[in-house]
Length: 135
Image (cartoon, rainbow, N blue to C red; front, side):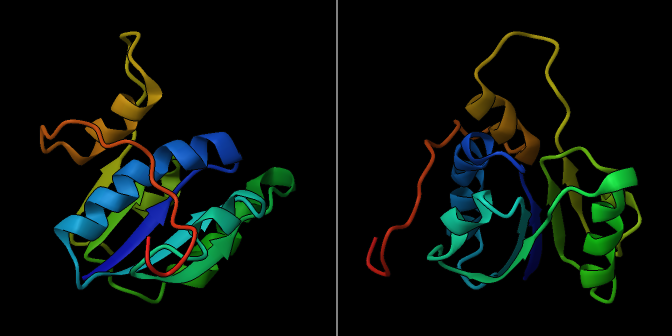
């Protein structure tokens, strides 16, 4: 399964998104995941299992960073696109399934908001950062 995981530019929000990523890895243990995040935040995904590609999105004028991301991923047919940035790019990529973050009108913790993107009703998972190949 090929998964595109678009997460935050900010390191704190990217850390919070690792619970969602970990659930994807648990659910699809044979998946091949491409992560798109900000350059500083991208380092937290370096040792994450199943992550085969990390695209560092440096913000650019006129939102040209989204065009850069599109140029890196458009030639794939994704089994699943998870977009935690609520960007339009998710709608212009070939994908069998897409899950796009929508901010909750209710006051709930960000981890729960991000977990709700999967729509599977499972309880939110705590963030998990892999610090070596064994974790």
